Amino acid sequence: MQTQQRLSRQGWSRPHARDFYDLWRVLAAFGGSMEREQFLPLRRRKCEHRQVSFGSVDDFFAGELLPQVRTHWPAALGLFVPGLPPCDDVMNNLKTLLTDFSPRLS
Image (cartoon, rainbow, N blue to C red; front, side, top):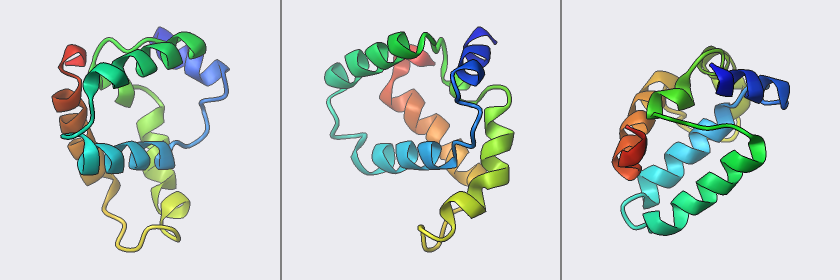
């Protein structure tokens, strides 16, 4: 909850359809070949900079963010992504990819 409030105060209340889509595409395409040891410090620094923390994968999908992403999914991505997959399919797959990629968050 504290993370969600900080994100909202820091301007993260805008729709994040593209952020979720981009993360899904990167992890789906390259997650198996990415070096986790290099990714984790980058994530830690970004979280420190934003003054947020994520204790579990579910924290990425908490609160107001997911309904906003669902609402804005077609408008934010439809023109740029031919054959855009349904938002819920991407979100479900992204949860699995994040859990596999960063087991410390699960």
